[in-house]
Length: 110
Image (tube, rainbow, N blue to C red; front, side, top):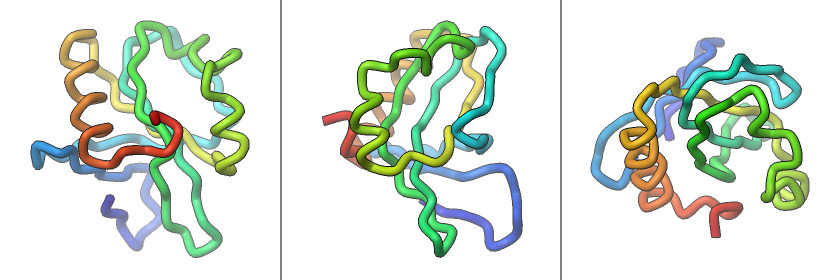
């Protein structure tokens, strides 16, 4: 993953295919609108580096983090942020999710 040294609300995450995906970063507690999106759960170190913990896709971001089936892993790995890539096509979103998982093998996707 590459991050800008400037304070920007975006992170670029490459997939296994070499495609780069731009995610807008939000604090963990952020409430979202009901949109279709690819999302990543991140842990930010004290040095400002984000670690990809989980990649997912949802048809309704507003309720996706209520009782998430991987919540225990997120907590154990000290989740801090959520990255959002709005993608209206469910099929394309699932391909992006798979590309990210193949490229990074996030600990909470295992």
